Image (cartoon, rainbow, N blue to C red; front, side, top):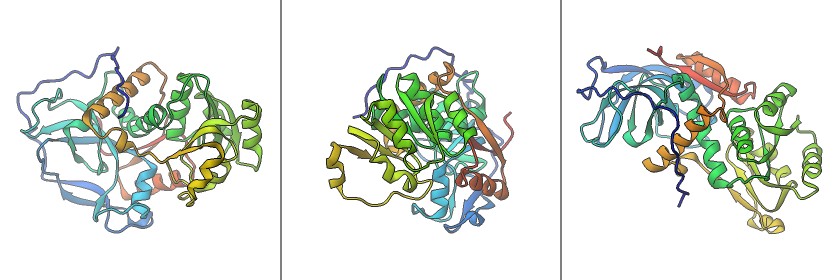
Length: 359
């Protein structure tokens, strides 16, 4: 079972407005959404008019202001993971709670509240969400920031709690340390007391990683350079954990820098999926390898709210700092450009889509 983490929030949550009605009267019957009818290249992304979702038991409706852009969107669009078609893209949203199904009895949220939601299909003007996967946006946090931090921040936090429970003094490697998840990994791991060795593709990204907690940064991936840096920092012992969102390109080098009884956390496929390998490979160092997915860490409402509360507390205390590097318009062309920037590794920090103006 995941560890129980008791978080006492030291900042005020967004005020509940306690509307007496459970639906706003201005909800239309149709909406715009960014979707695909078949998996493939970015050209498959279309902006179309579809019905506004009908709420079922235990669900709420959110009018979306901002939606985050994540690598998993490119995997789902491109065909790495199968989906039922047509498929509306997006994994996180922030906006206004506009309707609550009558079956939702115990939610502390009310119609009119600003909320952030972990939910598929968020590149749409409205999205329905299980009531247990929405969280009130804390006061002082912008709607765009809430949309930008949720998935990548929770991914980093849950992996550092459960994939490898990082401890003070641990030496770890974070690949793509200037990306969205990478920056959050550097920030949170360094706050927990770990020593972070990051990898980046440019000097500019390396400086950003250093500003966010990486003590050592290896640039460009030249053969032998990462191994030399790890050996020097750890007196030849290797790092106790590797957090790798790159995939195929960094797979082989990881085995050369992993300490005895170390953990290899592979969580992304930016360069393509890692190759298959024999479990006998793990014998050399009594190594562990894990392939986590965020949904299994925050599967229950209790898990989601516990980790969301901790993440926003870390944000409030400035241990997690969000850099939004690109705001895409709510058009097919806008999302195509965002995907190209992401897959081309031309970005740092977070990309978001502005679906509607934040009121």
